[in-house]
Image: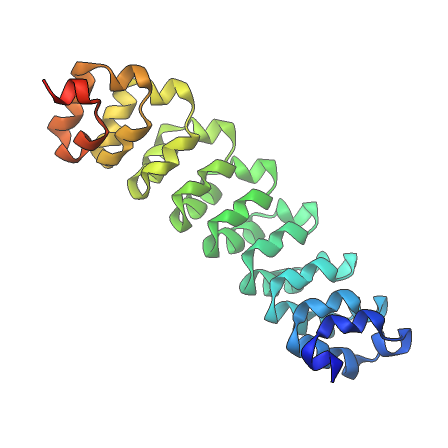
Length: 220
């Protein structure tokens, strides 16, 4: 009865009950994260762990190290919770297929990819397709890549929040960005926002940029 209302009551069960597959499975059916309370033997039981991660990928955190490195288990975890990539070993965080499976479902899983894959355009573009603000987790090199930034700002002006200052202060870059998304003017440098020639050029591209232009210029 206690397991039905609070599966983590398994913490206080005897070792024999924590190792009892049927008993622990009842807890998993209510809360997959009850895997953390299972015996080491059950945490290393692939069939058993798959039950948990298929319900909530976060349960991968409590699997044995061997199963955390098992691709079948990891893919199952990512399918139910892409952020479970956080609990995969480094070699899988550096595996392009594994990371793509995660970021295609939830771009924010890019945070847990290896540094090398954070600098991989295919992986980063996949993350951006999920949510442009995941540019935050891309490598510094890709944050300064105009192609990447233009792709990100197309769907979300806020992506420019993570662009380097040298680009948000670059007139040519920002004019192109505003042409793609007029609201990108919000992230132009203060110097550019005070540049009458630049502001009027953005307004010629799209009048919606008007809301981000300084009052002293739009009043001219």
